[in-house]
Image 1 (cartoon, one colour):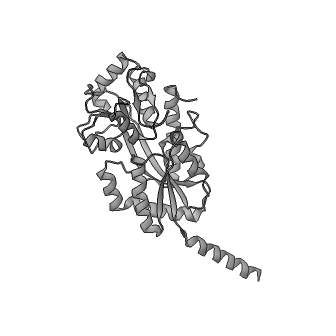
Image 2: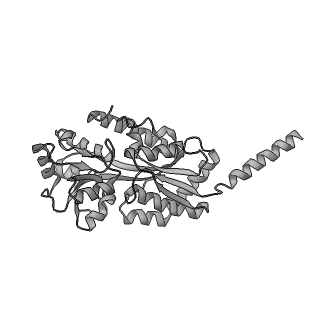
Image 3: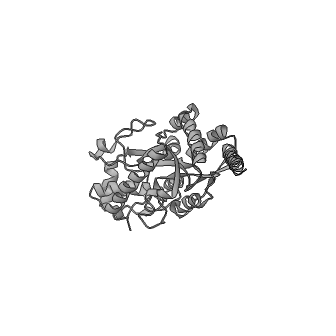
Length: 316
């Protein structure tokens, strides 16, 4: 009788897990609507719905330079019904004292995207090259301002690291925190700030509308969307390169079989023509890593960016 009861309990548990998901899933985005993270989350959510047969509702939880949304993901019930698109900032925020959260506080599902930083200015900016811009920043410290993410965020580090490498005090270009690249670009076009270092896809709307220009890309290769945008290597002889990345993750401790279901579904999304076409049309970089690979990728990012933050004086 005990053996029969045990068998029935195992069978019941297996059946229950096999039915995951049984209700809608929430996908939390720690950044504002309209940015690259939001757009990536929405295409992934739409395509996940087809495989999981349940609605995937994207929710923007902004604030605290990304802390609010990342915290909401980490503290959600570990049942697979709350996911998040965590970003490179999770390997940076704890270094600058914004939070105790780390990449180890999540269950990784998969790495899905990476985009290098570009240096963007208004279309009417007097600076036609990154060399001219850096020269003006050095000659007039504090006169210009930059934005595009929170204090100590990836795009802040991108420009601060470049300034440091070029022998310019990073404080010569004061940073104005924002809830993402989209509001940062809007502020720049409105005249609130002068420079926004962010990915090409995040700047694309303003570039295509003629309101902004990309002066250079922080990558060894020119961007696919705008192949005439020069690299820092070409403009300055600089090897400085930095990119944002995005990972689908769940709270730490979700059941292993639920994680497997999500990994399988996410890999189908990543391999789909719809996802590849969407990302290519916006110039978003695509890269895949499974949970083990993603864990290593995030650990490497944490170590490298922590060292970079310390080098530019932003680490606590």
